[in-house]
Image 1 (cartoon, rainbow, N blue to C red):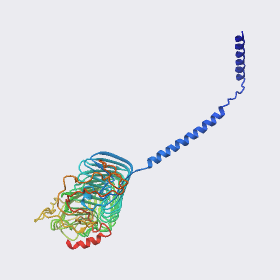
Image 2: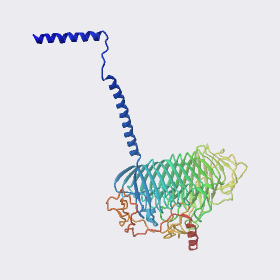
Image 3: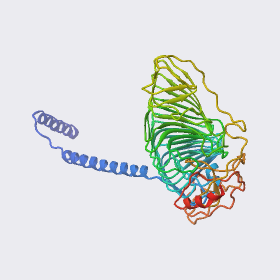
Image 4: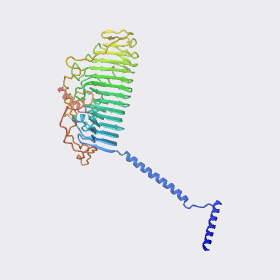
Length: 555
């Protein structure tokens, strides 16, 4: 009975509450307002926590792993036959090297890859401050270095930005490279050459004998800015090439680096006879972009066969000479001229062309090219053939002397001057059919002086330990005819890169991540000396002028 009464009372109360709710009676929810406030507070707290975590993550991302080495001949990073990648790193290299090991085989480079390694580097800051301390070095066939979005600074002599030798490969994208020392090209190669591909970025040199590019390899640069504040813009030695596409290059050319030539030029193609570059055809190709020489002409060729191709380039230069082909101080006297094939397409250019008596030129003006200039204004000299397409024009700016001519009747504007073709004055408005000239050959020796020995060096290197070779305003002249060894020296220590706070080299076998601040100098330096190594130039440091003068009596 009691249970029934209690059930009836509960039902009655429930009905009353339902009616109250239906009538709109507000039923307070005790925790509702507080819950809203708590929710908002928690949200702000969570946001602050998330922000803090994001900032910490960003700081962590911005922190760069640092690799350091101060050993003479050592490396901060060394990839030996392995595939390895680094990203967001800082590399600092000090220490010295005074031998050809640095130029030929990578001694003392901050970052060094060899023995078929593939080394990938992104977002790096690389600095070197020591003699013969190249920043990034690729050595040997099968070895590849890929580097992008990085900054490189070298501060001493014989210390290039990118260095490739022995058939190595270097691929670079969007780099910022500035070198300060003598004989320190931003993009370099040396004995054995290789392949270098550069796309984008800024490349500047500030030392004597430091062109933006020194090539004993096949080097291609696209969409970049090149600045040489003292030397030429580009040097190609021997059977090697430089190709520029949409590149803006400026050569201030304020200081000659060799006594072997009086010519200031933006681009030089030659053979030094030092043994660092095979004899053969040197190639320079440029499409689009601009080339500025603030002191002197554009092209200079001596002691080699050369091909020069230009298309739609904006040229600005300070002298009257656009193209000069003549003997200089390299090679065997009497056979050390230049033998050039020059092709211009969709191009407007002006200036004189000089071809001396032991040189030759085959000039092709194609695809709407306009040449305003004169050839051999002082009279007949070397053999010269000019071929002009029907939509191109040669406008003379002075009396000219050539050997053979092919053109239609409208191709030549004498502009009041006389053109002599094989000694006979050309009559304006007439067509002509001629043939290309053959390269000059000496009766006593071949064109490049192969029968002669490499020239005796005319200056000492920075350290005074070895004599400098006969390279010109380029990077690193060496003398001697010794052959390149078949491989890397076996005596080179493996622990170049081991990090050690005490200053001693770590015994880590791979040696990839060395960070030695004061590492001991390795005792296992290679004992072979294939040829005296150092870079060209009458001065690679403030004291080297005196060294060159002191040594001049030997040459």
